[in-house]
Structure formats: C-alpha cells, structure tokens
Length: 243
Image (cartoon, rainbow, N blue to C red; front, side, top):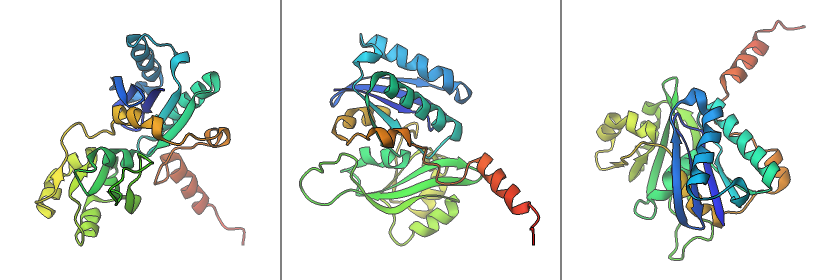
C-alpha cells in the first residue's frame, strides 16, 4: 500500500510517501502564504521522484489540526479533492497526538505543545498504552489531558502534580527555558518541532480508513474558534436585545 501523508497545520508544511511501513521520501514547503500552490507542487515532485503518479496512491493520511486555520482548510480541501478523483482511502490524525507517538515506547508520558500565538499553546498529554503486546491501533495512546489552548504558565502549573517525561513540538521549543525551570528532569525533544509526516505515512497502512460520509463531513480540529468565528460571536453578543 502506498500512502501519501499531508500536513498543512504548521508554518512549514510537508508531504511524505511510504509503501506500507517503508518511507519513500518527504518534501517540505516553507512559505505559509503559498500553501495552496506549494502543496500541489510538493506532491508532484515527491511522486515523480519515486516514479509514481496520483493513480499509484492507495491511501491519504492528513493531519487535521490544531494549527493554522487557513493551512488546515487547504490541506483538507486537497485531500477531499484527491479522494474524489482517485477514490483513495483517507485516514486522519491530530497534530498533538502525532507529535507524541514517535516518542513511545522510550517515553512513558509526553506533553505535546504547538505554538497557538496570542500568548497561548495548543497542548495535550499522552501516555503510552499498557500491556506487553503491540497495540493493534498504531495511534493508540492514553489521553491524560485533552487538547486545549492555554497559556504556557497555566499549562506548567497544571502539569506540576504529575510531570511528563518529555515535551515535544514547536511550543515546547519556544518555551524550553520555562519548561526546564519547572521540570529539570524532563526531556525537550530536539528537531524542528513539527509533526512527522514520514512517521504518519509509515503507520497509515495500519489505521482504519474513514467511510465516504465521514470524508465528506470532515472538518479541521481547531480547539479554539478561528478569528472569523470569534468576530461572528462578538458581533452576535454586541447586537441589541429585542426585549
């Protein structure tokens, strides 16, 4: 099975290819404003480098958020269009979970953090599944704190009773000093802080695909309202009452 994994949730977007669990390559596009154009070009380059055409892609794996509101819509539109044209399977994962998964089983408890701007981070806490047998679901992880948007200071206070073994993501990199001061034994994972599309592509053949209705209704995972939604809600609250 050939899988194309797509992530447009971050400022640096990426696409990756795998045949079953074997990685075939990855392409990055680094200009957020050009995700709409750059995504298609990156996919074309990646397929061509592996002697493939869109018809050779069996499955699409998409990161559904949280992250850039515009980027997420671009990625989902691309995947829905690809599915409609080629009838490829679709699997999804959220960015915070994807940050944590590659760290298991070396780490037992991981805090994923993504820069959410406005002095906040998107964050969630995951623990590796128990038991000696490998999980049938490659995305399995126990959620100890569900994805939310909050200030780094509030997050660190919340984590104090049971500190994570590791922190991952560009939010962790941006706030590494505060994390190190609060939890000196915790590891702050190195790298670019982005979810790994090569890892996603390599596990996607074991994930359960969505049915057609779920693909049609698929929406980004925002965690907090977009700017347009906040304006709409504020406008609604400011309207005079009829009473």
